[in-house]
Length: 209
Image: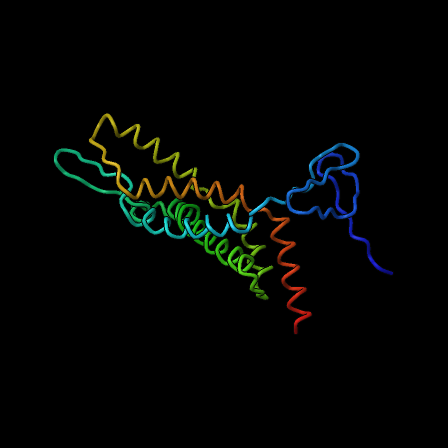
C-alpha cells in the first residue's frame, strides 16, 4: 500500500496535497487563504551573487579594525578576532566561544554553504552532498547572529564616545555591509524552490546514468 504524503496548513492545520506552484505563482490554503508557497523569481541567481559578495566581505570584516580608540595619546584598534582573544584572556572563555561561533565561524560556514548550494543549482551541477548542505544551511541560519554583535558594537561606541576619541575602521564598514548581505540572503533564499531544484537535478542525474 503506497503512502500518501500530505502537508498541513500552518494557519488552520488543514491537510493538503503538496503544493507545487510554478515560479512567480502562489499557492494558498483553500480554507483560510494562508500563503503556502510562492517560489521567488531569480532566487538561485540572487542567492549565488549575494553569497559570493558575503564571502568577499567576511575576511575584511573579521580581520580589519572595526573601531580605533585613542586615550591619552595611545591608540588601539579592535577587530572581531582580537575581541574574541581578549575575552578568552580575561577568563571569559564561555562568552569568547559564543562570540566566536555566532559572529565568525557560523556566518562563515553559512556563507560557504550558500555558495556551494546556490552555485551548484545555478550551473546545474548535481552533487550527492547537495541535500546535506541544504539541511545544514537551514539549521545554521538561526545561529548566525551578526546583528546581536552589531548591537554590542553600537552600545560600546556610545559608552566610549565621552571618554575617548573613536575612529571607525574599514572593518566596521565591511561588517555593516556583511550584515546587510546576510539579511538579503535570508530573504532571497527560497527553501521550497531550492529543494525542488535539488530534486530535479538528482532525478535528471539518475536518468542520465
